[in-house]
Each structure stands twice: as C-alpha cells, then as structure tokens.
Length: 107
Image (cartoon, rainbow, N blue to C red):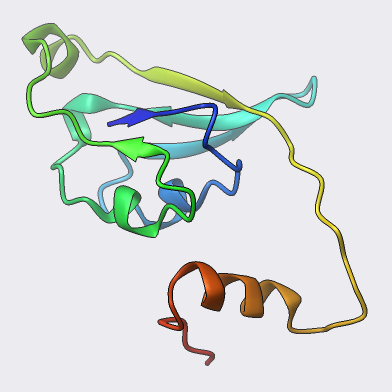
C-alpha cells in the first residue's frame, strides 16, 4: 500500500477501515499526525483503497520480502486540510454521499 501525499486529504479513513490493523493512526505530541503501514500485517484486501475519497492509495503487486519479514513500518505524515463549515448539520454526511456516489447510510 502506498499513499500519494499530493492526493491525500488526511481523513485517515484508511486506518479506520483496515480490518487487520496494518494501517494505524498516530498523533504525536508535537501535533504531527498521520498513519503507519505495516506491510507484514497487510492482506491486500483493498478496503483502504476503496474507502479513500481521493483515490490516493495504490496497492502494490509486489513488495520486497524484507518489508514482510523485517517488521518494517512505513510512516505517512499527513497535513491537516482546512474544512469550510456551514450551518448544515449534515455537511459531513452529504460530502461523503457525494464522494461515494450516495453509498453512505446513517444508523
């Protein structure tokens, strides 16, 4: 899994939806935030790629064996993106509905 930093909107939904925990969020004390990816824990299910609203994630067909056996972790530092809030209480939900072609359901 590789994240294109020029497309990433820093939502960290990839970590939220990773079923194996191969992608995990981090928030450092200095305000740095992002995700780490542990290739040895990744099963290439594609959940991260599918949930990414900006198509910033690519799944690699081949990875070096050392990434899988060496306990490597790749750290992706993300940049907070400004969000324009309005008086619409459903703004986040409406935005995701647009990004995911309406395939978002409320509980």
